[in-house]
Image 1 (cartoon, rainbow, N blue to C red):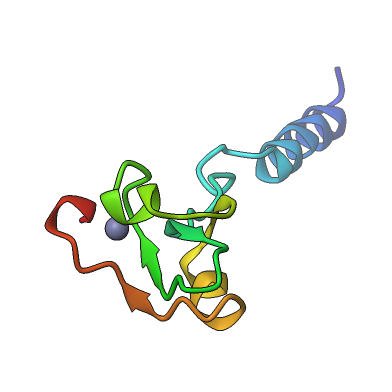
Image 2: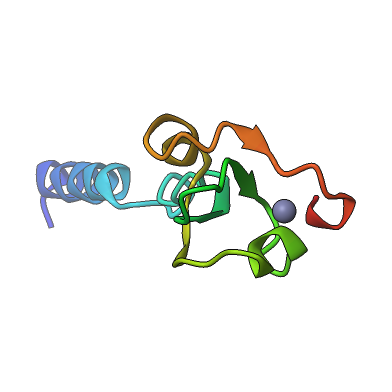
Length: 85
Ligand SMILES: [Zn+2]
């Protein structure tokens, strides 16, 4: 093999290694998720799905990001029950 070809193939291998995903940066950033009640009198978001506050919910209970619980659903307050946190 000619020296040029060796260098060229080595460079190709290195370039490929540079582009190959390492796996380190592929992890999805996890947003904090909360539970909210869609009932008309609900006002808080819950960290714990088993919270007693959610037991009183008369409508659907959904899981969403804390951001959308606060900004979209107006469940600004974190639940005050001790067992919820
Ligand atoms: Zn709660």
